[in-house]
Amino acid sequence: MSVIILEEVDGPANPQNAVSLSDPVRKGLLETIGQTPLVRIGSLSDATGCEILAKAEFLNPGGSPKDRVAAQIVTEAMSRGDLSRGGTVAEGTSGSTGISLAMVAQAVGCHSYVSLPDDAAEEKKQLLHALGAHVESVRPVSITHKDHFVNKARRRATEGSTNSQAEPVSILLRAATEGCIFANQFENMANFRAHYLGTAPELWQQTKGRLDAFIAAAGTGGTIAGVSRYLKEKDSSIRIYLVDPPGSSLHNKVARGVLYTRQEAEGHRLRNPDDTVMEGIGLNRLTNNFKEARIDASFQATDLEAVEMARFVLRNDGLFLGSSSAMNLVGAVKAAWELGKGHTVVTVLCDSGARHLSKFWNPQVLQKRGIMPDKVSDDLSFIAKDASSVAAGL
Image (cartoon, rainbow, N blue to C red; front, top):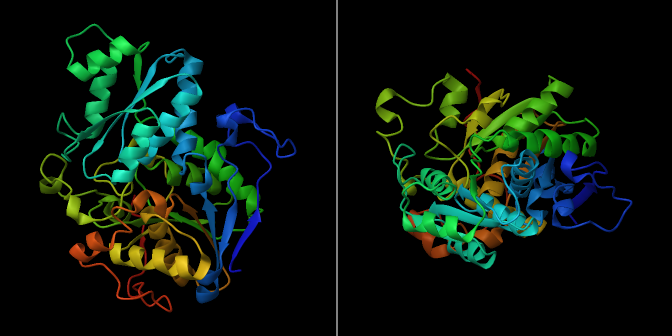
């Protein structure tokens, strides 16, 4: 077997959900979140001469690291008294965070409302409905537009908690629930804390502090911010890399200190849905969470590299991964090549392929975009070697 589960962590996922692995019984859903295994990716480790390790976050009960974020947001809101049983959590999301929030909300006796772009994978919408969320699909528009899915969710939450004039959906939320909060995953620092207090300490313990680099793509920026801050505090020599998909401006921010030219700013440039088949990663604005990241350098990667990687590790390691997981592994290989043999590179597997059957794993969609491989590659020649990382200019 080329996939080896190295070790499970015996510490808590976060302060709210302290659990001991010596106790086989978890007291409810929240205690099952976190403490995910660290997996050696045998095919990539053998091919690069580095140890490439990945934290299997898709094994969380809701299928992604967003479970950590959802639990942190909801438990903090309930602790402050902003949310109580019978209330509603509203969020704008491309899918995974909404799924996690819908699941966590049910576990604590709350409701959920999710606004998402109408080009999100169909299976994500189906799962949200199955989890009891009130789902509203909206057309993709700039974040500066009032009907961007994030702004729509913010408006629903505000109108659902007041007696102000509201749209029908907001009135429905207010009538059916005990108030409504906006989760605000992009700007809510509970996102950062979920990874600083949970994901990062688990990684540190699982590797026994012996790692040379961490790499991940960013959507909200919470994962790379929380993990990078924690690891840099433990050992400042650990390299932190960003890997960025097509259509995103974060690579430019890391490399040059600016997201875009004035003409490309939000409100002038709409990220084209055809820029990438990736979901949940890449962004054209700077979030509060991403601002906390401590990134040394950045790589760019392509959809085709991620598509090929997903098929490569499925055949060689038996891992059926989604788009952001595959993109992270592409980045891990690029980092390994840059560092040289004998180093340990760690990343995160955020999603399984089960959430991406209608897009990332759909041959018709990939053929239409011109990124359907003829066959599964025998080696890593599908990853571009001609571009080194660009050092941070933050």
